[in-house]
Length: 79
Image (tube, rainbow, N blue to C red; front, side, top):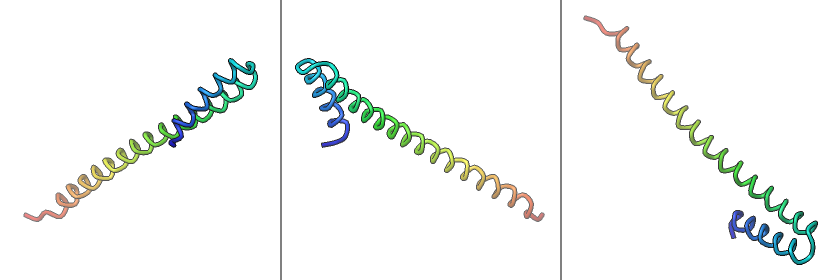
């Protein structure tokens, strides 16, 4: 079972317990589910950020390599 499914099940369980047994227990379970969902969202956003920054770093390295090659080729070219 993946973590998002577990978080949604905990949220549903918290709602059911909150309605049947009283608000405090249900809210406690809902709070745990909310924190689990927030942690998943942070991890997902961090993954996107790392992927985007990795792509940016790769592009910058390629641009610098090409610029360095062009400068080297222009400086060493003999007529």
